Length: 151
Image (cartoon, rainbow, N blue to C red; front, top):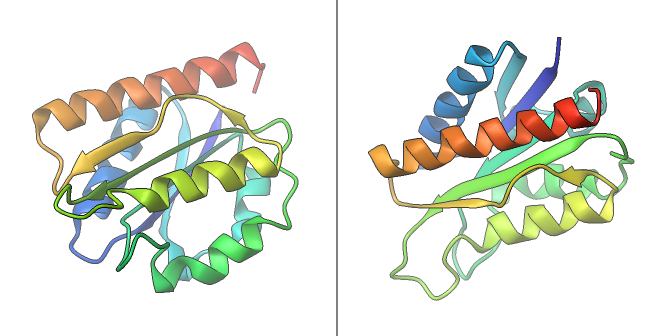
């Protein structure tokens, strides 16, 4: 059974909602899913999963949230070769650096050798039905990539 680890950072609940949408979809696809809040998660947990997903909001001037900084830094020491990843998150287009944390996590996954399973999904504030449809497609694409890699 494909193991999925979903880690989220959420201050308003939007990214936790995103994580729940993804959990539901991956479970529907037959995966074993573990979802956790970033400050309660060790980055090394990704090493025990086939699929690694981060859902994060962007803080202040376009940075990774404070509660995710240690996790973000610890990710840089991992070797996630052979893992499939996806990154998504919520933001507000009012800000110039809309969903920049999504891009930052994407770069780290690439640097540590993980294979991108889907284009990142950026959600304006809380997920609406179109966003949920996009997140479902995101999960399906990641799952398909994992299957192609025999994970």
